[in-house]
Image (cartoon, rainbow, N blue to C red):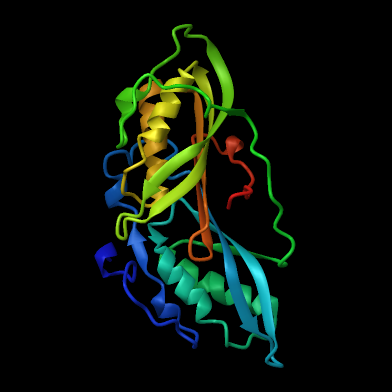
Length: 270
């Protein structure tokens, strides 16, 4: 289905009855056409934190939770975020006999939309911990050149050509929703093993997404592809933690080696 047919950017009434058909799948295939062959593009997960989850128990008493969704990168489809928000709100007045019954219903519906197994973990309202970023923050560096759209030519190896294993991160990621044009903000983590890259060039490359229109998942996959093809590392991980919008934050991660798959985190500004 085309994203132009989705509910993004349109006035919408919030449903008050359970409505699984409101979920809107978007094929990953077209965005992956140029780099579908790369190792790691379909290795990883998209983690979502859902902060507006509520349903009724059999006595009609509201229940609330925070959800963590794990959607595999191998899924043919991602799920458009506004449709997911509306889907969860459609369950606010629906009775479930147990938390497990709610989880089973959500997993069934999301798996159908994604055409892959999607898992949901429910956390109590006070249980989602804030993590501290790990690695070297590169935000104080000064790039030699800046661009406003993704430009892999900004990436360069360090002159030393040493082999390194590093973990870097930047809070300066910004991109735009491809439908509404609204800004998306995030922190991007890069774990890398190979010839030493120029850290200033990586920061310049991250900043170059500042006026780019792309879904979160697509931005991370393009970053992964450009880093992989430019540096040809032994191993690579790219993981972005985007800030919350509409009660959801989206956190895609792609890895060349599943041994480098991190545990999902939530940062303070999410």
